[in-house]
Image 1 (cartoon, one colour):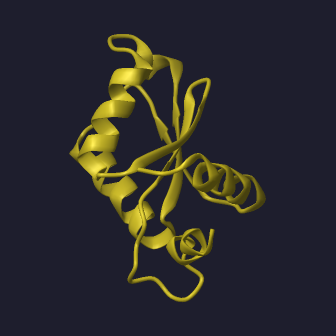
Image 2: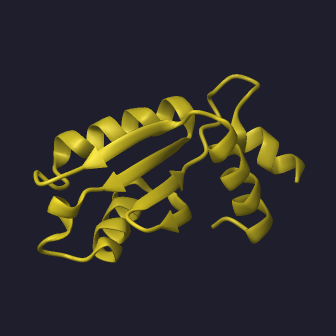
Length: 105
């Protein structure tokens, strides 16, 4: 679980850096999409996910977010409109990892 101070720092980093962005559309969330997001999180620790209007027809965005967070074992950093930013620390990354920066806070 992230503290408010950590979330604030991660939001700042997300706006300053170009982070990987995934779009979830009418195909919704399947195993292939989860694997792609997993690879992005392993490499960059933080990803941005945008839900297109076609994906939100059957279920609510909140339900999709909860499913993703539990499947990926990640934390929600920010949710604005149909876009979310999620984070999961990766201690195996080099010295520039976000997890190391968060420990300094």
